[in-house]
Image 1: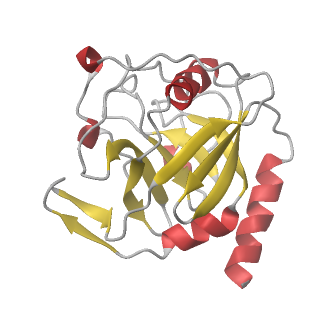
Image 2: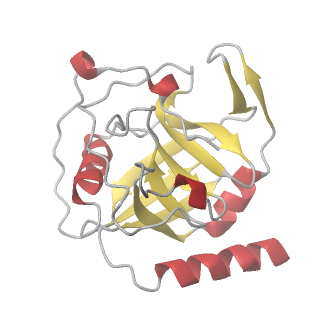
Length: 208
C-alpha cells in the first residue's frame, strides 16, 4: 500500500502541468490513461496516435519488463512476432520532458532517429535516459490514471524467452486489449502500417 501511495504521489506531481490528447490503454491487468504532450513532442505524439488510430496496438504485448526501471511494449503480438511499422520518427528527446516515474517514452535502437511503434513506461525516475549532449529517449506523455496497474506489472516474473532470444520477458502475457483516444473530436484514420516498413522491433531497446 505504501508503494502505491508513493507511486500515486509521483504521478500527481509529474502531471500537474500536462494538457493534451488522452489515450486509454486497456490491458489484461487493468486500465490506464495517458496524457500526451503534443506541444513538446509533436512528431512523436503524431506517430504514436497513428498506431492508436489504426488499431494495431490492440493485441500487442508488453514484452520487456525490468522492475524498478521500465516496462516496454507495443511491438510484438502474443506469439512474439514483430508487428509492421511505419517510417521511423525523428528524435525529440531534448524537448524538456524527463524520464520520470509514470512517463511514457519511445524505445529505439542505437540510432536516435529509429523509433517506430515500441514505447515504454518508466517505473522510476530514469534520468540516464534523458536527452543532453547526446540524444536520449523521447518522452511524450504521462500516465494520469492506473498507477496500480503499473504496480501489478512490476511484480510479474520475468526470464529468458527463446523465441525472442531475450531476457527480461514477462512469463505471464501482459496484453494490450484495447487502445483508443479519449478526445471527443478524435478522428479514426483507418490506415494500416505497410509491411514494406517492417523493421526488427527486437532491436528497439531501452538501455538501463
